[in-house]
Length: 120
Image 1 (spheres, one colour):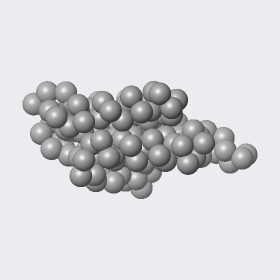
Image 2 (image 1 turned 60 degrees about the horizontal axis):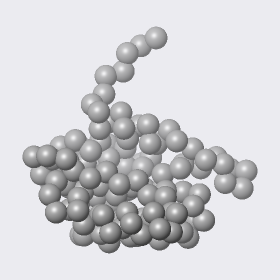
Image 3 (image 1 turned 135 degrees about the horizontal axis):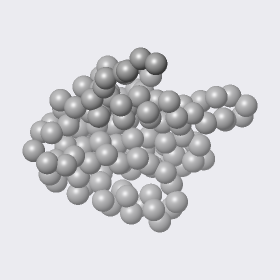
Image 4 (image 1 turned 90 degrees about the vertical axis):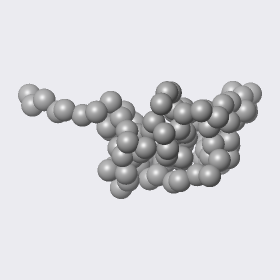
């Protein structure tokens, strides 16, 4: 067995890409794509990993964290909860901007994966 050395961000993105779901007899990716605002702490880690795996997990640059998360929730609703979007933000107010969308997802029982930034 060979050892594969990856950063935590690269390992996370590869893991998310590996998640599949059966939809109408077809094997489809569970995570259809990701929204992100890259700055401060996440540009050099998760942003870089998402750029490298763009073909397998499409990434879209957002302009406001709450809108990205709400768009992901809308996608989950349109797909009848069968596929999920990811929303990631940099550290600071961006992380708190996603809280309202998290409450919307919870109250409507809609899936979304939120990856907020941590520290500088």
